[in-house]
Image (cartoon, rainbow, N blue to C red; front, side, top):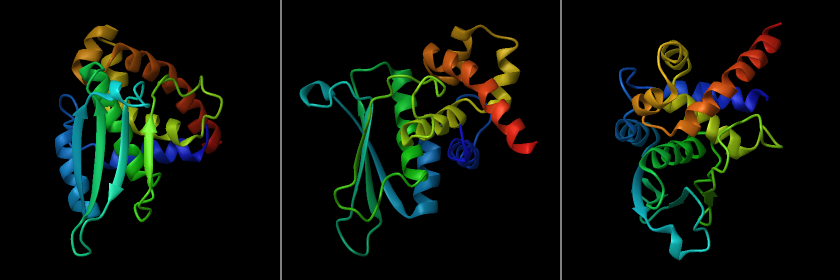
Length: 188
């Protein structure tokens, strides 16, 4: 892990608008729109008809008129579980806010597979996909709140509370000691 993952986590903390209950992604999107002067549209559609049918989500950008805000289109696979859809949407917001999507490039396009939420299992832990996953984990499951609730509740209860999959809960549990160790090493 490196500074890019910590940067993704810190960026997510900037967008944690409501610390009671699950993260309201609609509020987060409205906040981003006002802050970045963009117009974000989220569409849920059937990915099975396309070559990227196993993807969780995609993001692209375009501008229709010079004086209008840039349009950001986030497509979410309608064939995956609602909780995985939330994670996929938060992941794409991470790509946007971390600068992975080059807004001035008319061909900028990102398709995310989200095969493994666990940041420690992938070969390149600093990849943009891992950064977006770290962003989504922190946005949807704030570290301090997660640690507090994890002491009291079962994984399925945490998944229900945060509105994420149990796989995302398991990955968050696995990733937190790793993140803490990296922070401690950096401070030493």
